[in-house]
Length: 239
Image (cartoon, rainbow, N blue to C red):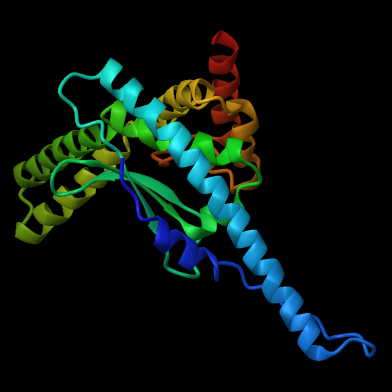
């Protein structure tokens, strides 16, 4: 595992802007500003320390689970922080150009979690995507969808632009075909990783109660939040 701690601390120091209220008449204006700056710095330090603890605790467990469940896969997770400001909370899994698995958190997500269990569950979920091969399976589904729809468009006599549009649509449909299943699979394995790392996955899954519910839309990328919470509860009960 490798990640850049200095970037985290520097970026978190300015991750939350707290409006400064008008100072009371008996209080010097500079004192309010100093208090506000001190509060922001304290919150940033707490969030940073919590992130460090979760990463150092969960990553070895995720790596061990990866090695146990896969054969020949790269299980050396690289943890990175996206320090761009004004981004909505997000975390994702990808691979670098060398095939190394990358788990990225942005500052908004690190600041928005209410406890270490939520952060640990998010990390367990994202590492589970890699362990389960979801990225490669999504690519394969996208390629299959592109080939099928572009082939049908060609057979129907579409021109080059029509075939290209069908290929793009097919890739999008193919990529989303099993995305809900992938999310639930990652929730289940993420629960295992979270619990084995010593955190409470059910408490961590409370994160879903504070994010928009995607419902059960056709070809939506994520399942309903209620379904995700339920699979976490069922998985945790079996451990």
